[in-house]
Amino acid sequence: MGAIDSLPAVLQQIFAHISSVLDFQVLALGKGGYSLSVGALLGAITVILLARMFSKLVQRGIDRYAASSEHTNRASLYTVSRVTHYTILTLGVLIALGFAGIPVSKLTLIAGGLGVGLGFGLQAIFNNFVSGLILLFDRTLKVGDFVELASGVHGTVRDIKIRATRINTNDDVDILVPNSEFVSGRLVNWTLQEATRRLHIPFGVAYGSPKEKVKAAALDAAAAVPFTQGLKGRHAPQVWLTGFGDSSLNFELVVWVNAEATRRPSRAQAAYNWALETAIRAHGIEFPWPQRDVRLRSWFGLEGEEARQAIAELLDPHVSVAPDYTGKDKTTRPASTASWAKNDALRNLQTSALTDPVPPRHDP
Image (tube, rainbow, N blue to C red; front, side, top):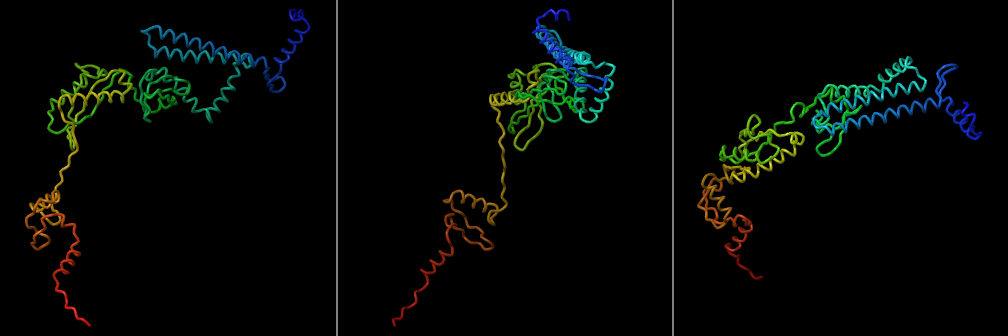
């Protein structure tokens, strides 16, 4: 106080106003109970902000170390970074509570209230937080893994946050998935142990194509794609004859692909389809076309050779046709199909008018 008393009167008044503002009671619980002043509240907020800034600096330091060192396990460093972040924030909150005048011994009351809140509305948030910690320590899901959920969402894990995990799809779309879905749901981690997988690329060729020639073409296609893991050994490509289709022999090119293709299965399959089409044409193998054989048992009451002659006449009107059946009696069918389109009733009337005798004319 002596230093303040030695200041000019104007500054003393300013300090007095600031002190009165900081000592203003924002919250007072009963006479002689807990009270919260403006100064204590500002101190608590400042501690939390400083803790957050310090956590960011530590995270940046860990990220720089991971980027500079090639032999470090980035998934482990990410786990250390997230746990350090949560620890610093927790310590900051405890120190801030001390600045606010809330003793740690009285936190049991807050914990009881928090438990009631968890039972009513915060249960999902708390579940996702615990699930996030499980994911960080369980090591079944790491940043950089290519995963596929039961809902059909698939992509690369980018972040494991306090509430949700960010997945980046191959179309560069970020999807936030709650952490509890990874723990309680079915998860396919394509890169859990090895960053490789086996693809089955179906294709078909025309009947009569030599199987050996088809296999050679498919192996040439596998060798032409850089995603192929290896051409010899345990991961060598294979060609399977899987079935006999309506118009084609059905094959599959079974190939092991590298980590890049594992994370982009649709792109990899398109690359192999392109290479297969090129290799099959280069080997002179025919692609299948749908074929159907139509068999007619009768044609307008005609059967056998008579039906074939009728169809031939329909295709070429100038083809003459032998005598045939039209109904139960044998008659001679016209040689030209053009006569089929004539009006028989009108022709009959015209013929009758020409052949019938004209009645005699009687003058009145």
